Image (tube, rainbow, N blue to C red):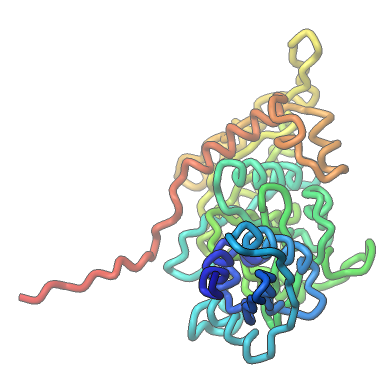
Length: 376
């Protein structure tokens, strides 16, 4: 057995936050092999007190222990120097990246960015966001969620995420929720249930940091849970990520329908596309299978039709999600209904919406093809 064989086995060990091999990230400090087969692996942690060091120790041990001739595995932890962390940031972000640059706004970005919007609060926008994120991840997509509702942040609780982000100098590593969904929220940086009292410029800066300073990796889909209405955050999203598409959430109720139309019509001023409308709380299904329209009917279809007329482009009704007590309970317990009760009517409806979104190919606008004109 040689150190090279051990390093080869370590190629299978991925950093839990970055999701890339520790050998590729320069995290393997050394490999020592004693005559009796005892192997010692030195690992560089990105920061002192890394919350996932036990996970790394377990994964390194599991990768090395099965090698022939290994009698024991010992993992020794060290911490990267400032120079090593700088090299790591350059490796992850790419050389020459401009400070505060948002990767999703670059012409070559293939990530689909969906800004989940509603005209008013209480329509279940955040519940749909987290369930769509988990459902998309279950379909093999790499998904991130930005809790952009700075004042009313609730996404971490709904995803059952209690961990705080790890900061490597100016780069923030977001914690993961169900199915590997990455999530960031202002609630991860405030003590307890402290209220956030900020004006517009601070909101804009916070959103910019979530998009630029967080290491998201190569995402297929990024969901932005916007606050209700057409305020500062909605405008900032259009400025920071012009390619973001609006996903409008409403209920069948007439009052919700009218304000949802206003939320969607912001696309006319920001020149964004609307990917579709989702109608939540569409009906309540009784034990005998009959449906009760507690909030009326037809609101989602009416919003989709109205926005199609306003924008001059077809805006589809992506789906209707029935009322389900388990949907609310999942938000309280941190276990989304698409995970806890996948066969429930609400979970199936959300899954069908996720299928429609997952079926859309990654964006190609502005993608550099690497072609050169042929000479004459």
